[in-house]
Image 1 (tube, rainbow, N blue to C red):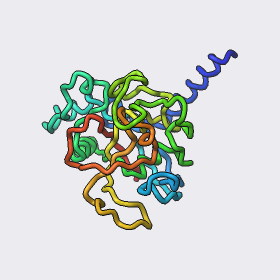
Image 2: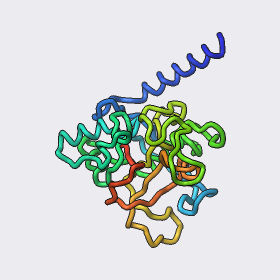
Image 3: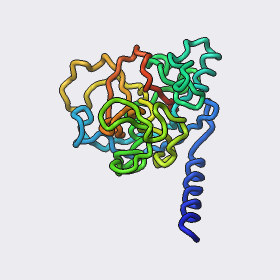
Amino acid sequence: MSMSEFYAVATLIALISHAVAADAGPIADNPLIEISAGPFVFGRDDGPENERPRRVLEGQAFAINRTEITNRQYRRFVEETGHRAAFYSNHPALGLDDRPVVGVSWGDAMAFCRHYGLTLPSEQQYERAARGANGAAFPWGENGEKVVPANFGTDNCCSGDARDGYPMTAPVDAFADGASEEGVLNLVGNVWEWTSDIYAPYDNQAAAASAGQYRVLRGGSWNSDRDHLTTTYRLAYDPEFRFAANGGFRCVRSEP
């Protein structure tokens, strides 16, 4: 067997194993990927203060959308409910059907998820899906220094570039090489993603002055530098703001 044939077979096996752990879910063309219960690493001690401390938590099973919610999927929700459109719905690049919806507030994102019987992921759910059980720095593993299989920006924050093939957002199924161990795509890069949590310091830290005023975004985006492109980076953000061209979301279903 040649090396190219070997990699083709390995890729097929990986895709099959991922498919077994998914169901169609309520959102068309965006299956839910099952994340199993069990211990996982949360936080880290060698990064920004607000990511500390590192500890091992016992996680409950949940399922998360394979991709970010697309413009096509959000427009369907708007048609069904009469909810306001995303701010960049008609943008010639950001509004493309297969791109992640951007220009939505925390409330817009939560309304979408609830319409389908889902909710936004907690920080713990997002981090577990992105890092795997063993707490990897990136969804694809520990290596973030060479070729990074994600959509991100210039070396110095915060401008987009086209080195990765996309000057702004990429299709939600792009960068398959950067999938998590369960097969979830673009948990780092492309767009920041809303979580359900209010921003506050982790355990055993003094209360931050901003705690309670903001919600947490995770994952980095198409105009992030590499320092923001990790599975643990936390961004406090105004939940009412709906004009960000680099912020979207996906949904989860918590298992009973």
